[in-house]
Amino acid sequence: MPAPRIISIPNPHSEPRREKVDLLVVHAMGEWVVLDGVYRHCTDHLRELGLSVHAFCLPDGRIVSSVDTDRVAHHARAYNPRSIGLELVVEGAHDDHSLFARIDDTADSPYTAAQYQAAGWWFRSQADRYGLAFSHVTPHSALDDRKQDPGQAFDWDAFRRAFAAGGDR
Image (cartoon, rainbow, N blue to C red; front, top):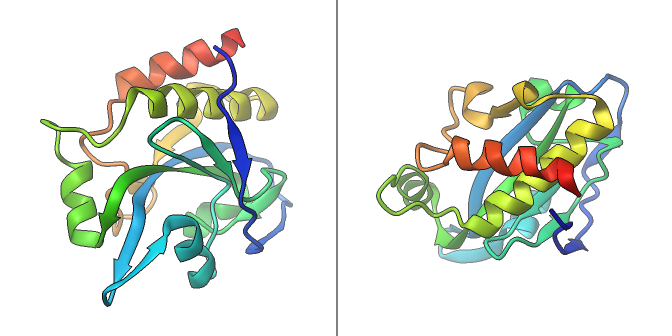
């Protein structure tokens, strides 16, 4: 599988990595985050909150690199020092309520084939780099009971196939 197009929108909220990476975290968030009637792009929203993630995967399959994986991003609380995270971006403007409804809509999943392919490639690249297997990939919801991403609409079988195909690059 060829590499997806990668663009860079750096986020300064990171720190040096001191622990071995043993966890790859799948997140999801809205493309535009609506708070108090103000729309912020997901990259800006995390930065304004003092949070970060290593990358975003847009619905068209582009990857937005945000924090180098050699550094710790602030995306999964106590798991940050030993994890790498990627946000699957759900198209459109969302508050928490509308995002949770979308990521749990199994009849009309917000995730695209291009996202599965690109995210599978990206996670496989990280797994290869850090000597990890698919068993090291986990949903954000498994790490924090306040979270539900990537939700019930996320097709783990499609993602697993894309991860496996990522090794053919």
